[in-house]
Structure formats: C-alpha cells, structure tokens
Image (cartoon, rainbow, N blue to C red):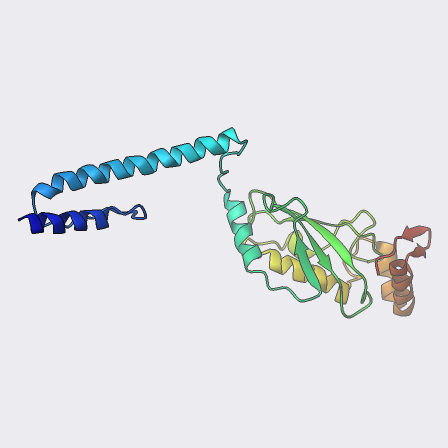
Length: 225
C-alpha cells in the first residue's frame, strides 16, 4: 500500500508542474484525489496572483494597458503582413510600430518618364478601413499630370472606384502605375497634362528638369533624384 501511495504521489506531482495550463488528475488511489484537487486549486490561484502582480508592476512602471485593436487596425495589419511589392517600392512607419495607421511609402520608378526619381507618399488609414479608402498624399513636389503641387493624388481607386476588397498593396501598385503611365485625360495639374498630350518630348524634358531640381515655368521643384 505504501508503494501504491508513493506511485500516486509521483503521478500527482507530474500532473501539477508549473508549466501545465490544464490540470488532469489520474490517481488510482481514492484518498489521493482530495489532495490532488487541493494542490490544483492552489496552483491556479498562484497563477492568477502572478498575473495580477505582473499587471500591477506594468502599471507602476508607466506601462499602459493593451489597447484593443479596431476592425480597421486588424485588417490593415493583415494587409501589411501580406504585402508583395516590387523592389522599387518600400514602406516605413515613422511613428513606430504602435501607429500602423499612419505610414509612408517610397516609390522609385525603374522605367518611364520618372525613372531614377524617388517619391514619398503618406498614408492615413481610417478606423473604418476597408470601408473607407486610405488618404494618400505625395510629400515630394513633382511635375505630374495626376498629382498637383499640394500633393493631392488623382487615382480612381482612392475615390469612386474604391471597394472594401481592395487593399494597401493595390493602392501602392496604382501609385507606381501613375509614374510608369501618367494619364493626361484625368488631370490635377492641367498644365502638365496639356504638355504631355500635345508635346511628349517637352513633357519629358520638363520632368527631368524638375527631378534634378529646377524651375518649370514659374514653379520650382526640389531635387528628387
């Protein structure tokens, strides 16, 4: 009988290791069950106390409680984790990992009129995303028919053609497409659009002058090469 009790105690001790999240007792000796459940209750209470102590310590050290993510943040996190961008595009988070809703995208076209330039865009994502398109502005002053001098961007999927099934990857590819194939039929900079339509060679010259840092007409463009 003493051998049976010793074996039962060993089984109880194995069951209640600190790493166990679920307590299961297998003890063939009935008198051991009461002790086993008593130890289990003590262990669970100990875990709860430790968790509470950890929470109090974080608060005492100025740590803030974990903020519950909105549906928009969860969807954006998924979009970012699934990004599949060309080598000419990159994403950064100037406010750190705690602010995913505001980020920047850098585009360096490798073909077309704007090859060799670097253009920075800011993204501001609403908590209602993806039911509302992200707000996108170009932070680089650029001579472009579809981007005005204040950085507003004319891209259909950011306006009337936005749908919740679209994502950040789609928007970045749309912006990249603006540089490889600028569109004079839907302009924000009407002067640039007219030059592109009527004299593509002059348009190309104006683009290069602007990217190297210079004036196009009365407007000065900082270097972005």
